[in-house]
Amino acid sequence: MPTKSLRRAFSKKSETTNGVVGQSQESSSFQFPPAVLRLKVLHGSNLYQTDVGSKIDPYVEVTLGSDSSRSIAVLRGGRDCTFNWSVTFPFDPSRVPDGLNITVWDQDFGTKDDVVGHCTISIQSILKCETKARAFRGEARLIHTSRLSGRDKNGGSLDIELYWEKNSVFQTVTTSLRESMLASMALSHDNVLENYIDKIAAIPIARNYCVTNFNKLGGVAQAIIDKHKMSDYTPFRTYRLRLWHVDSVFHGFRKGWNQDYKAAQQIYGPKLPSKTMRAGLRFQNFMCYSNDHVNKDHDNHEILRLADLYKMLQSYHLAAASPRHNSKKMLSSCPRYTYVIMPDSHMRFSITSKKIATDFLSKHALHAGAATEVVYSGEFFFDQCSKRAKETGKVALVIDNNSGTFGPPKEKLDLLKLLMQLNFGTDLPILALDREDPLLKELSDVNGIE
Picture 1: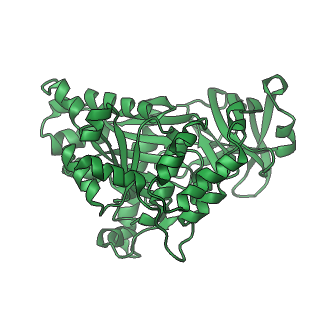
Picture 2 (picture 1 turned 135 degrees about the vertical axis):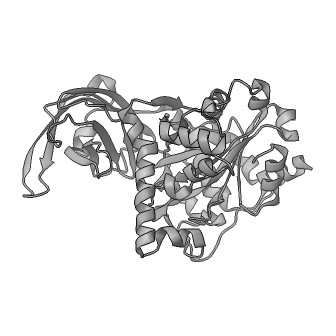
Picture 3 (picture 1 turned 120 degrees about the vertical axis):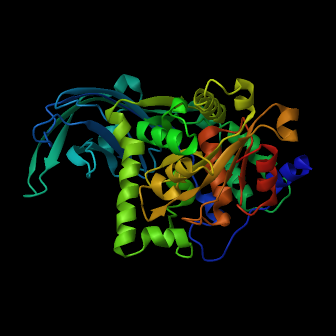
């Protein structure tokens, strides 16, 4: 019965393997940051001109320790542009990183983005900015390093606001509670997750931002190849979701491409056809995740809980339906998504199916931009039709490691689940299942997953 299978999924023992970097016992070293660092980038002034004969398309990338985030490119923003972009980082003043690194890039079409300028705000300066009342408000001066001469030039400046503050909710999570929550990951009790799932719910969830890109060419390919009607055209949507704690949970683990998988060999091989294929995948990745910013075809959503992600995806799923489709039928159907979690802490994903164009546009190698390694990858969908879902009235996230291109190990599934809970809370159930788990097929069939 589905309910028994689901109960088994929530009480299943944590699996480990010998000699694997980042195995599940290592999750016990994860530390919950007691504070948050808030940065707002308001305006860029006199930015270095990297393009000849045209205005630059600048965006901001910020890195603090192992966490990073980036803004959306400003179309033809030029040397003086308004970003009005905010980001919040988990922050622990007692575990000091090197500083806050800020880089402004110029987004280019078909070529590598150019560095406009960069700067580092020292940790000593950051520590002085405790609370909003003591925030730094002013200019962060950028340095542009010439690629030819190696000399430093004036890269312009950014108007920023920066401060950090303790999170009072974190103070309620005592050291012993943290240790008991994370130690439970390595225990073999039948009620492992039931013991700590409510305690994780008390941890404040950092803001996650999801950028939805609308790819027109991908939508045309879908309409012609998959739907056989241009009248059914809708843009192909790709999503870039900012995740927190990726390196802390996975301990720097990276999974290279699967050398035993024939399709991966064709992509990542050393010969010219493979190199050509990688170039094509990088170009299509650019079209799906970057070029649409130039056309301003994107939405930016704040995702605080798993329910927010579910509602956002369902609204797009319904909007993509042609007028001939029944809206109730569309809402009850469950799309499947392919995803990759990248080393830059972003989760990239899109809807997938067995149809030719959609299948190509949702390849893991395409989401990864032909990168040779990722943190984790697979597929996910929301269970809304099982007996459990109907009895509780709650959908569940079902996420797996079904990626032939990268072949992520099942021993990391407990870390994947912990990462999802830390980012989205436990208001809705989260099941992290191996691609060979019978429960995955059971839930796929119940929900009519293609």
